[in-house]
Image 1 (cartoon, rainbow over the protein chains, first blue to last red):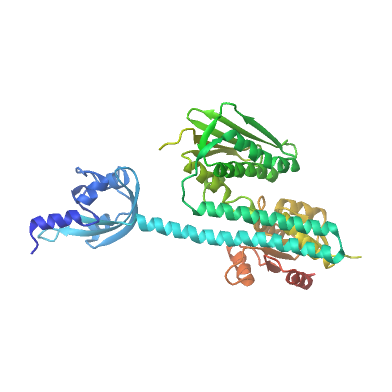
Image 2: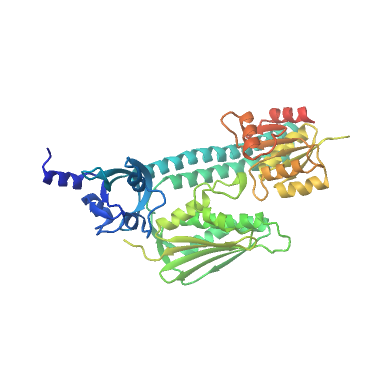
Length: 349
Length: 129
């Protein structure tokens, strides 16, 4: 026979959330582990505590146990006192009086948040492998094509074909190296290597790299860089990637548009706003609907068919967040998009 | 004389160059389109003997384009060869099945997986036209 004091101690120290619910789903008993995460239940209903709801949940194992007296279980997502998601596997069992009437339900919930997070990461890794293989296949196609055309040139002694073939090889080697850099960047969790950098010089450098490409597609590339932006502590390589991806996407958005009347333009702005340095890239290209906007910063989402890896905006987003900043977008189909990155001027220690 | 025409539909410039050169080398005339919308316009202007089609493209995807031409009597007799990097574990047959079931479209007349082998794609085309 276990002593009553020991029973209470066991109830408190078991590493599960244990509550006893009355027939109205009020928490009448809760163990210490539960109180540490969800606070003092103070006679509240379980659905108020777990789900911040005012009425019982639609699917609830406690309801089922009250109805049939059997054990039930369910996996669910609840919210702790601080509002964080907690993934739980809930088991319920009936508590009966001497006459066998169900008077309460005991609910034991295992916290499986860490396991689910790991599963999500593994699933993301699987998608990364699949997407990488697909992207490499596309690059390989370009390389194979370049070699084929180049070989025709050698066979027929045609410089033009050799040049075309060689350009195809160059283009695809460039794509492959950018892809690998993006993948390495996405795969690693690391703090930015901050040094004092003049942000305007990074913006100007990136603009310089894209001037020829914009001109090739008859897109006017404009810049509006404020003079009050001075030296800030950033990782210049990361910031270069962030701006490059936004600018490259803006040019692609103009190229993808089908309008014959539009004069395409991309504007890059950099200015100070409160505590932040703001980098804004605006285009009047194809634009996006709300569904596309909602998927923008997720892994491997691309609107560019075979030529997109879906990594570019993810890299931009990662750079902004790792610098303590944010990135947001305004867009409408047919009107264009504006991406805004806000990077804190002062580094928070 | 009487040169057969192939329409190459692919959003990637290098793939268009590659396929065009393979077909030209083998005596075909080639026109290109960068997406489904442009391909429809090209078809209406100049009917080809065969179409090679990438499935993953911006604007009108390859599947949407394929569904449209299969639903239009004037075009549904033109043989279509899918040229795509999207392949299933069972290779070409598996992918044909996938597109037939998942997108509810009839199977294509031919299928070539990327990266394209010139001998393979010319072999598939020669069987069809």
